[in-house]
Image (cartoon, rainbow, N blue to C red):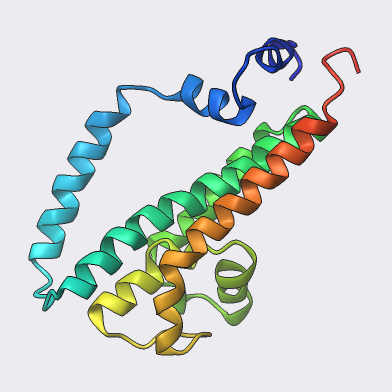
Length: 176
């Protein structure tokens, strides 16, 4: 925003959100995804989960949904740069808050759990899908609530996209 490169993006005959995503895509990440996928498959093979077609579909949808949750939240942060210009601290905060899902949310107090479930739905990235696949009880929502994990991602992404487009529409240029 500060350098004015977004002004040039607005002149292109393509959705600016899509253009920004494609412009930021790095082919080097494919190796990260591949290695992470191998580790994930190995870990799943060690869990002795009784796989059904429903659990496989749920797992794949939850994987996609978790990515969409993170993309939606990052879109909201990116949209804030239209308003505040300097939002690097928000991305740092996002990645620090994302560290909370390295552990089961049940180890945190109720206040943090509420934030991770209802405010910043990071618990739907891995905790609730894992609880569903392992048939474990979850705090704050009933067992049937874990079925909604694949739906939270598309909703978060849609909200993030709409907010980003709303803020982009209000953008007045690098000169103010």
